[in-house]
Image (tube, rainbow, N blue to C red; front, side, top):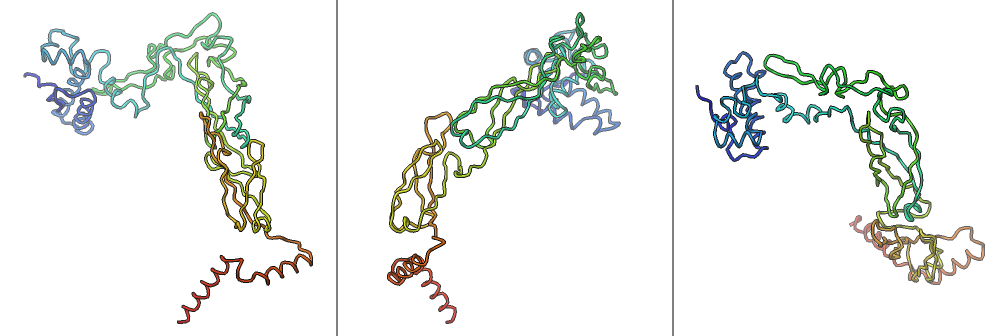
Length: 377
């Protein structure tokens, strides 16, 4: 019986790209999978046919040969032959399965050298608003893993070296045949490393790394904000048996300030002013985060909540020469602990200017009066 066209088997066009072919294969493989079609000989044969087709078409060279010569390209030993499910060469269905579902199952193959990347580390650092304004150079000490100097990270005792695992032959995985399925699992002997150590290093006990505190210099740029992080590449935990190190992430927290409140690159400052200054006007001096002082002119008749803007007096904008702004929010302070004479003067002031110097309060109570009158109607 002649073989069906491989593209027809997968339900794909001849011009389909690799991604489309993979999706087509997955769809057909799921449809005719033996677990979904128990005791169905026809489904089993189709499943084998689907895997045979995909094994050819997923390989660029084999696909090119098939497109030119058809099935004849693989007859009489040509290009290694597809050979059905049981004869897929070195990779077989387990390779196809890993191509499709490797990420879901934990993904990626470990190299045969037994090396693995070290873990990333996190360091939480709190800095002041002034330090965020000016930037900061500091040192931190962190507990970490470093390469064992006794075995140079190999994990093996002096005079010996790791050898290929006898169980998986250095692949880090073992295969088991279940019916016509070939299942790959992490090797139980070397735990996926691919290599084992017969004589472990006495200092690191075969790990290739030892615990040690290290000191690092940190440069915090001016303008950083709460929640920013700094990445130090290669300063994380070192990998096992000479594997590459992970990274160190420094997460920044800005402490609350007793005078300024930050909003992005802008600063806000609440400044109480005497009632007389608010009424008559005048100049006040306010601090800035760089340690200087700025003069603010208060116009006569200013109310609580009046906002004054000081351009360029806010936080530095990272990686630029610019700055945000600073906003002064005035709070008119009511005088307390008045003397008898001061109270008399305020009463005289009230009588002298009754009804003409408090337009907001007069307007409010006028609206209240109208509101109550409307309720009675």
